[in-house]
Length: 526
Image (cartoon, rainbow, N blue to C red; front, side, top):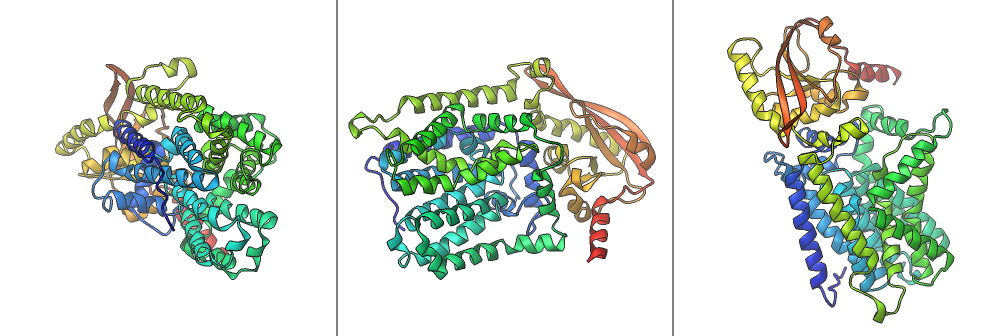
């Protein structure tokens, strides 16, 4: 596998360097989001799979934070920044193989301008981070071995490597499996010789073997993860919801960067009407087969159920390559280093970064006044709670108001993970989930690892004023509930959130263990 060195490598090197510096700044500047702090629990309590996702994201956090012993927002996100740089080079290589070096350059620029690839998977630590790397690397392998009929015999070993790459992508995020239908469709229409090769089937077996630990874990836990995700995409009986599909399309429009989104679909439409005009027909079809099935699937699901726009994110990588080739349809003498479309995309992404980061950290706009809630507060203020809670905890323990290092309880995986990472762990305590498996997710397993609930124990409870929970549970489970203190979260000199701190004294009734009931019920069925 040869690495291509562009004839003028400096622009690509500068693009990777500058975008990496920007990602490092953003990773250090913005606090971890709900999902990110939750995935830290995957690193704390590694397993062959988890309630929500396969295990790769936890392993990435462990690897780049040295076994999760060194904990900081930047180290948590280090793998995202690292793979974003690698992916930028790979997408250049893909563009060069799809058409030419200028296509690769445009693809690298468009990749960097996409909000999904450069921020959601390139700064934030999400399952999409490792998935996107293995997705792009798999495309990188495919582009040389699928299109040409003469490569079947010479590329058998490389096809086995492709099976490994897809398998690793599948233990990053389940949706990587969409690569296999794309391969099947392409071979069916363009290169059926591969169906005669054992390497194709061996590659499929390799993917299954790599993915098998996730299957075994789910078998032991009665396929709880698959059931959870199938419920999220199951088509219900409530009829077509045009608001859901509208939200999905709008989300893709924003997540991909509006300029990139418009350019991508303009290129697809133009390419379909004028096949072969700017891109070889079989390569055009190859890229569509590795994108449209995933996008079409989730658009269909969004007619009936709520979906999340980043689910289709990897599929847009292939379409970015189509858009890059589209930009090179003119003669070489007319090609520019930065076409107007790409300039607009660069300006758009920089504006989003500046305004988004400033909104989170400084509250430029009073979102609560205009839209009823300020979602930027989900990623702000948690750092401020560490020191005040330490003082509150030490005073209460000194006055014998609460048992030493009593746990915090929380009713949902968020804000449980934020409280765990920013408040409990730095103050030598921990969080226990309280409630149904559907609400507390991995905390059902962590409760067991952390000793669970014991009669007579004390606990802390922190109620955030922007996400209030009912205190009714405390009346039936604890002997005494003490409103103890309040922590104020300030932004730009104003109080934007209040954290109400309660002491829960003497647990007199063990909470209902939804997780154990689920396991016992399914064990009896088997």
